[in-house]
Amino acid sequence: MSSSQQSLTKSDKEEILKDLDNVWTKLETLRILLLGPTGAGKSCFINSVQRVLLGRNAIGALEHTTQGGASFTRSIRTHQMKKRGGECFPFVFCDIMGLEPDEAGGIKIEDITAVLEGRIMDGFTFNPLVPITAENQKYNTNPHPCEKVHCLVSILPADSISRMSDKVIDKMKVIRQKASHLNIPQAIVMTKVDLACELVNKDLTKIYHSKKIKEKVQVCSNKLGISLNSIYPVKNYHEEITQDPKVDVLILMALRDILNFASDYANDQYK
Image (tube, rainbow, N blue to C red; front, side):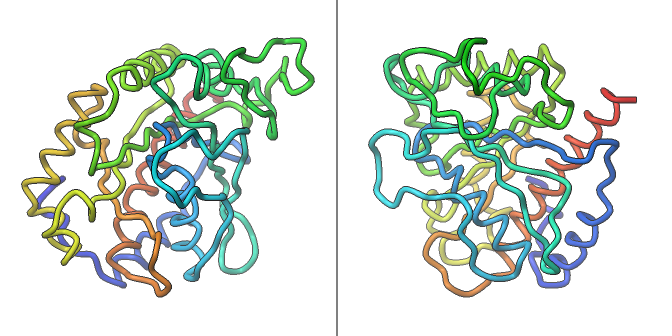
């Protein structure tokens, strides 16, 4: 949250889009795993990224429009991000079931570990009670490097991060440790900044001046142990019909760094 990052203009957007075209990796596809509690905005973030990249409204990941309740995403799904010309970017988002405090609900930590290792195929439906086994037809015994995760991104809601269940946070810490053992880079995308701060809700350019948002970023860092410069406050598109360059730039700044993290990791791993 540097005070120098104050410009959120259309020209900034075009500059970052050019940077995305220059992301280089030895792999055909980089895989970004999104992790977070139920209702944090994982699917909404995916749709917001696709919308920014296309310059128009887009729905690729189904979103749950009501608050609370069980995870709407029940299976693992890979989302390719399309370019305006019809081609796809060399990265995908991996969307999975949300974390819940109840041990009998949400996704199992063993399943997330398997996802990190590329061992669960697209379309597998998670069982909150029993993790996947090697006997399952959706279990990948010999994952390709492109099927493994190259960056773990935790999605946390700014408006409720302080009230998040300790059980969910503990699960996220365990998963972070699993990713760390695999040397997978990690970041946080902090969503719903407009709901966390009235000043930012009125004027998104005030995000780097908001004491409340800085406090929320610090809370994210304290809870998960991720450094401040790897935490990205954003506003997802959820009710807007037209594009907003300020929203776009925040999303793109997060995306650019995430892809660079993933690319650096993949290039180091597969020399």
